[in-house]
Length: 71
Image (cartoon, rainbow, N blue to C red; front, top):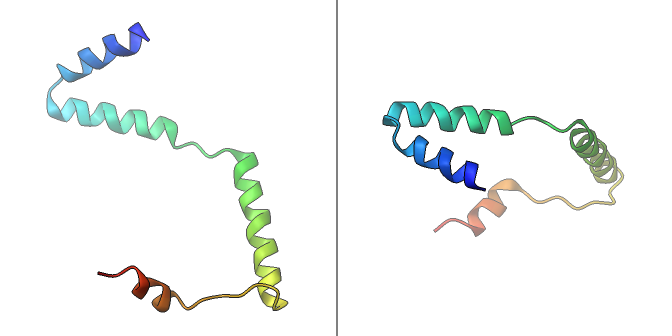
């Protein structure tokens, strides 16, 4: 990982605005969807919705759930 350490040291020397642009570029490069995962989530959500419509899956009111976690 010598290259990563070298790049990190170089990045730290950049001006703050340039570092932010670098971070945004890196994050953007990671924000790619995986078609297999995306399709799996779609299939799962459809199965869950069908189970809900058939009365096989319980649901909870969002406001009730939210209140559990409020301070």
